[in-house]
Image 1 (cartoon, one colour):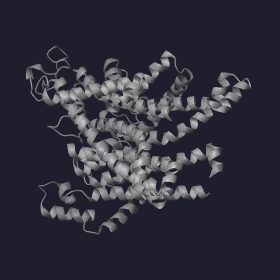
Image 2 (tube, rainbow over the protein chains, first blue to last red):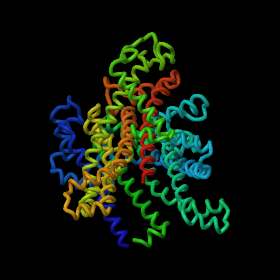
Image 3 (cartoon, rainbow over the protein chains, first blue to last red):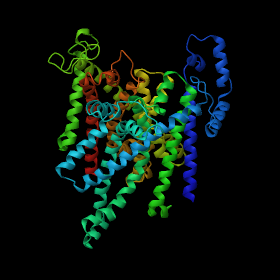
Image 4 (spheres, each protein chain N blue to C red):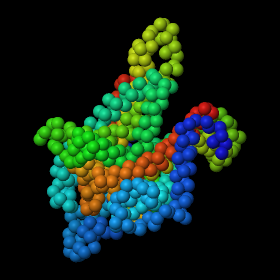
Length: 314
Length: 272
C-alpha cells in the first residue's frame, strides 16, 4: 500500500513535469507566436485577433492552468489550420496509429520471443551466430529505410502488398490488414532485435542459477527445465522492457506513417509542424507522453503482481 | 590501443574497422571528393553504379559517392557535438542527483523520467518545431535527447560507489567532495560512460537521419544522409541502388558504433 502511494505520487509528479516542459517549450518560440503562425505578411489586425483567441495576453500561469484543465477535460480549443476542435481531428487519427502500434507489438512478441528462446537454447551453434548478426543489423537499421526495402521487395518486386496508402478497417478488413502489414513490420524490426537479444541474455543468466542445477540433479528433462523453470524467470525482466518497446513503437510510427502515407498521429504531427499549428502539436505531444507514462505505470504494477518476491518485499 | 590488443572479440574488431573506415572517408572528404557533390550532370540522371560513378548518380545527375562522403561530415559532427552536450548536462544532473540523494535526487529523476516519456525522436521533433530546423538546432535537440541516458548511468554509478568502503573511508578521513568524485567515483563509472557515449553517438546519427528524412533536420546546403533518402524515395523503383546504398551507409555507421560499445561493455564485464 505504501508502495502504491509512492508510485502514484511519482506518477503525478512526472505528469506535472511533462506538462511543464511541453508548456514551457511552446512559450519560448522566438518572436511573437501569433505573427509566426500567420506569417510575415499578416496585417496587424489579424495578429491582434489571433493573440486574443490564443489568450496570449493573459499571464503564463493562467494560460497553463487553462490548458491543463483542457487536457483533462478533452477540450483543447480549435486547431489553427483546420478551424475545428483539436479533439475531432485526433479522433480520426488515433485509430490509425493505434492499429499500427498493436500490429507492430504483435510482430515483436510473436517473432521476438520464439527466436530469443531458440537463440539461447542453441547458443554457440552456427545458426545462432547468424541470428545474432541479424539482431545487430536489426538494431542498427534506420526503420524508415527498412520500410523502403520492404516496399521494394514485397510491394514492387513481389507485388504482395500495396506500396502505400490507407484502407479503413470498416471498409475492407483484409485490405486494412494489408495496408498496415509492411509499416508495422518496419516499426517492429528494431524491437524484435532488442527482444531477441534481451531474452537470450536473461535465459542464459537464469541457466546458471542454482535452481537449474537442482532441477537437473532431480533428473528433470532439459525440456521441462527450460520451459517449466528458466523461461518463467526469464520472462519477468522482458516485461520491464515492454514499456520501452511500446514507447518506441509509438515513436517509430511518427516516422513510418510518413513513409507509407498513413493518416495517423505521426503524419498529423509533421503536417502540423509544417503549418505551425502549435495548439495542435502541443496537445498531441502531451497525450502521447501521458500515454507512455500510464503504460509504464501499469507495467510496473503488473510486474509486482506477477513477481511475488517484489510484492512481499515492499 | 591497449584496449584493441586485449580485445580479441570479432564483433568488436568489426566495429572498430567500420568506425575507422567511415572516419577515414570523412577525413578524406575534407580535402577530396571524386566529383563536386553539387555538380549536376542532367544527361546522366539516376545512373546505376559504374566505374565513373561507383555509387551511381541521383535524380539531378550528382555523384552519389561524393554526396555520401560529404554527408559523413554532418553525421560525425552531429554525433560528436550532440553527445558532448548530452554528456555534459547528463553528467551534471546525474552526479548531483546521485551524490546528494534525498529530495534533490527525487526531483531530478522525475524530471529525467518526464524527458524519457517522449518516445523516440518525439522530443527532438518538438524542440526543432519550436526552434526551427537546421544544423545547429538539430544538434541541440539531439543533445537534449541524450541527456537522460547519461544522467541515469552517472547517477547509478555515484550511488553504487558512494556505498563502497574505500569511499566511506576517504570521506571519514575528511576528503572533500570534489576529491572523492575525481579520485574515486570517476574511475569507476568511466567504462559505463564510454559505453553510453558510443551508444548515444549511434543513436544521434540514427535520429538525425530520421529528422532529416522528415524534413525537420539538417537543411540544404548542408549535406545529410537522411535528406538524401528523402530525395531518393520517389525513385525507389527506377533507381533502387540510390536508396539501398545511402541507407546502407547509415546502417554501417550505426552498426560500427554499436559493436564498439558492445565490445567495451564485454571488456568491462570481464574485468568485473
